[in-house]
Length: 139
Image (tube, rainbow, N blue to C red; front, side, top):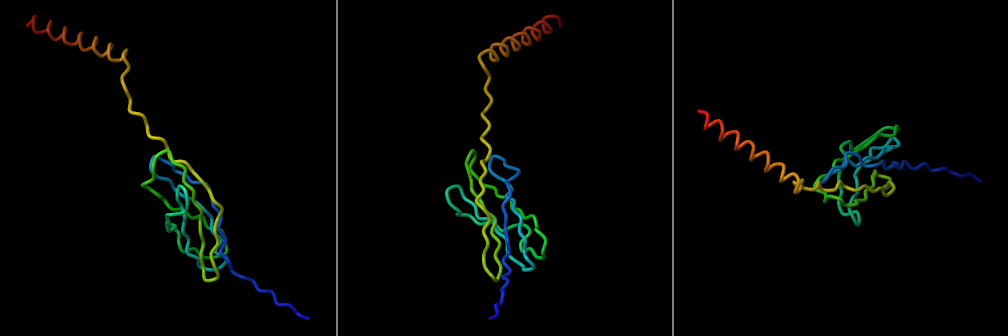
């Protein structure tokens, strides 16, 4: 009895954390081992399900070495949790990275002047006005 071993050339994908997270954007990161094929690389992402697809800046990749891949996403809502995964697809099939998540930055509060600040500003303006008035009187 003989056996034949079949080796499939799946492209392997692995997620890494998102970086450069700001108010409305982030950079999604992953690693793809093309396994000597030429897979296309995309990122699935969304806040409740994977509803958006972005092509990696490095797609397609090739060779045997793991290749870092990334894609920048903008137009996100502030202070919101998003999920993403890297996806490598070649003629053999599709490989999905693990689900990862990140949270966009919170909106910065609008600075306000406290009551004390308003009083101090008023006193400063009063002294500036008095000084200006005295200069006119002396001239």
